[in-house]
Image 1 (cartoon, rainbow, N blue to C red):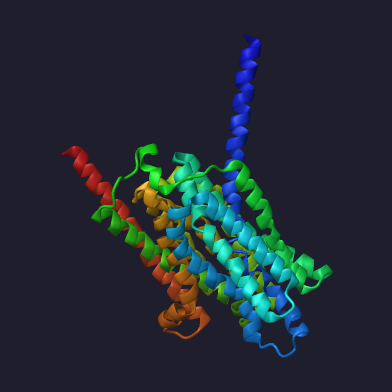
Image 2: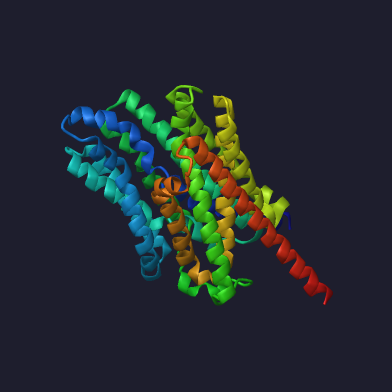
Length: 408
């Protein structure tokens, strides 16, 4: 009898360990999507080796992965239905590794651009799956917690990637900096070993409690969260891009202090993502209101700051808010659609984030009636406050209608 119990315990522990490795393997995919800009530090070495290279072309080696990644995000929505999730992830990580190897051996800029485009395409093949797989494989508090961790892993990939590239450049040439992306090989092995094949065209029968069709009301709710996501992402990117020069131009500190503010912002994102599950457990539907309110207060703090400390504190707050509203909006948005449409819905939501990244300079210029960075932060804070108020009214109206329905 005792041996039987021990056998059951061992099997339970083995299953728990395997389940933990599956979650880690899915989360680890998120290390790559936000790390494409980590090689920005290679630009000086690249221009030194190729003196005739323009600054724009050198910068293109950093940004071109974002273009091919965005392109594949849209295409992958159709490819996943045809080939399944596992082939897409394994193919994407393999393509990323190939792009990294070619980048490390690139004899000229044209080859490097091709390799970097290939790398971005590889990441784009599984980018949406980083979130939609969590939505598909998990539910309840575990789902919310893992969505928060997913955001943390993204921040870790961005900050850790930049740090590792910097360390490599201190001991080797710019070619070797691209070795960071060979982590894709590790991700490939982990996914192959611990994550099963999942097909979106066979999931509804296996998942209870979710919607079976997309209603008009669900479309309206989804559209609302898409718009909110786009706006708050624009403000996040505005702070990310503007704060280094804002600190420098206001004589709060050097450019290195401004760069440190961006790092602190990433740290805020990681912390927000790590505790998102606990925050959601406490505040439930009010989590988005809380996140947008924190972002509004933080942007106001930056606009009112008279020292680098105030700017850094505000940047941390914006990053922390980002760590909360991203998993909430994706979780809420995906809850309105049938499970079989989860990857399509993730793709549409990612178009909001990528669109915000691309259009941020133009939107910022449009709303900045004062013409200065100070006025831009102030206006951003006002608009974020308006969004927070709208979200609060929406929540209170929902509560009132629910109470009236219960009393009827």
